Amino acid sequence: MKLILIQVFFLLLAQATECKPRPGRKTFNKLLVISFDGFRWDYDQDVETPNMDKLVKEGVKAKYITPPMITMTSPSHFTTITGRWIEDHGVVHNMKFNSTSYLKLTHKATQNQSDWWDNGVEPLWITAQNQGLKTASFHYPGGGANYSGQAVNRALVESYAHPDSNETEWHENIDIVMGWFNQEDFDFVTLYYGEPDGVGHSKGPETKERRDMIKQIDRTIGYLMKSIQQHQLTHRLNVIITSDHGMTTIKKKPQVEEILLSKYLKFWKDVHFDLLDYGGFGMITPKEGKEQEIYNALVNAHPNLTVYQKENLPEDFHLAKNSRILPIVVVGDLGFNLNSRVIFYVNKGDHGFHNGEMDMKTIFRAFGPDFKKNYLAEPFDSVNIYPLMCKLLGVTPAPNNGSLTFTEGMLLGEFDKETPGLTDQIRRHVNATLPLLA
Ligand SMILES: [Zn+2]
Image 1: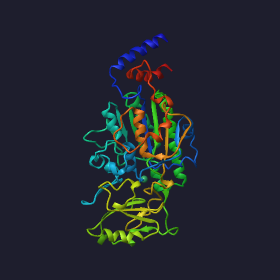
Image 2: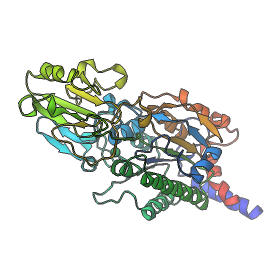
Image 3: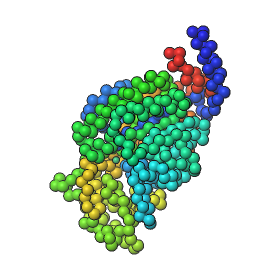
Image 4: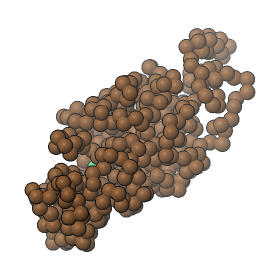
């Protein structure tokens, strides 16, 4: 024991010299944020999920969380990592688009396009780096862009050919991330998986295939929990598991009359540019002088279609301020996709619908040394995850629209307590060394 203590002392002495002081309490644990795209809030309720059930006992579960309005991958993920509403961060769609040049780039093609992501709002990776932390993004939307010329310390961007549902690769990615924390001392990592969004679209949310995917995710969470132990990170790594939006079954003929906008609009004559055929949310730029005409044509066109002129968008959408929002916004009722000229029967499930719909709500789980156990949190908006992440990491937040009010009850009572007699640096390394003594 004496020998171990002497070793620990020299380890602390050696490491303390290279530490940077952090604001706030003692020291701060590491943070891993995992997003499973399109994980609807109730997906764990109709299938066996032993590992997620275990996490309920060992950590925090929110009943559900509400993504921002527009319930799409890039806009929602960027709200999580910035704590800003979509009108502030400017990533208003999965596609990068330009209504003058008619450019449309797919979600994957935008990942290295800094001019799409960098609109003067700083994502947490960059803020944390500027305060001395080491951060990484593994496939997380926006992680591959530069912000004011600054790149994330380490960013892996999803390739076009990347398979969404390969379980072996999922586990390998966890191994890689554990290595980043353990061997390279990263402080904050975001890890993204493209499922269960893929299967929700292709097969629909109420299918065996979707339930099987949830089992696969649950096994992966089990693998993660084991991995954290094996890498001796249990006492110094907090984990948040969340997602960007839910999923709903698309309503089709003859069950309903589908929305087909060409029934009401002359696209060739009146529409300059449109973002439609992309789930329940769409935008239109009318040709010169045609705005009122298009609005009038759509306002009573279909009982399950709502049309807004940009200046009349409800304030709680938090969209109208942004110049990328086009003059006409259309939203379908739950399950009614916004088809433009023809109906492509590809997706059986979709999203983009109003964020107040229960099918668009998503998950929030958390566990680790700073979280309470067996704690059920009331629902909250995903914009509030940002200040929580900042608090966990000891980072002074950039200006944001979130609040700690909804999440601070999840943290252990002693979170903010100073530890007398230990400096920031030493405390950090005591934390880091504990697993060696265990
Ligand atoms: Zn999707």
